[in-house]
Image 1 (cartoon, helix red, strand yellow):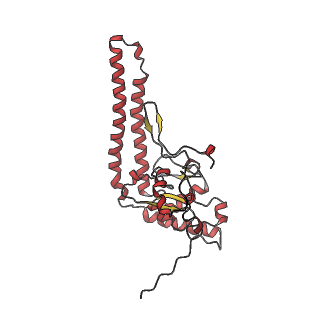
Image 2 (image 1 turned 135 degrees about the vertical axis):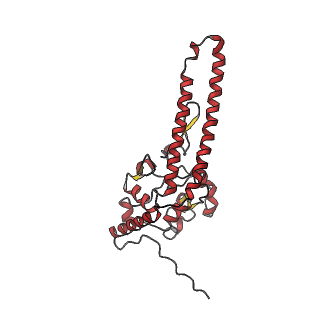
Image 3 (image 1 turned 180 degrees about the horizontal axis):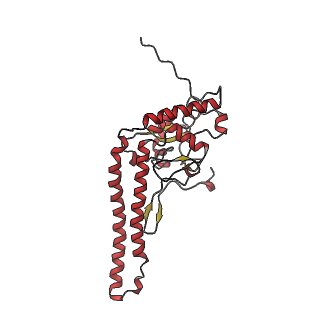
Length: 270
């Protein structure tokens, strides 16, 4: 992507008063930083963390939301099929361990990719183009979106908890912002001169307090959501069955094509 086409990295949008407005749907592309070529891919982890805004390329979970969930490096094009891209920064994705485990060595054949059966990648495609959903559940707007949701299990319990958390954060921020905007919008010049200055100081203090309040509420909600992320997932088995069925259906659509790398034979114990 040329410099003129680059979109800003994922940053919170800001309303008047510098209060952040969060969104479950990232609306900009991941922009990759220039990096030193030729390094081992593991040496790029900190660059990936920065460029992907410390969030999973596939499910958008952030490190702070995932807490105990490990983040790792995923090869968009699997190592077995494109060994030439193993250390290529443009092929590396910052991924939560769960999404990376589900993706593993899945490698849709060219015919399937041409029909949209491929994994979403946030450095080339807008998330909102492929996914939609305002509640705990997301659906695919495109074949790529549906494929990614099914293979990576993007409606798993932990992600539903996070989406609910984000919704509450947005509602909290909106409540605080609306109150502050009401204060900012009050015609202070209509007040008597003897109280005008004092009132303006009070409004400025209230705005500063509001920012602190938002951060404190965010911290409380994240702490509350931390334990449910590792709670038992009652629907896990059912989703696993559905996922396996979907993968068989995809394979049946392109008979004779290889979707996964052949497994290396186990070494015999001496």
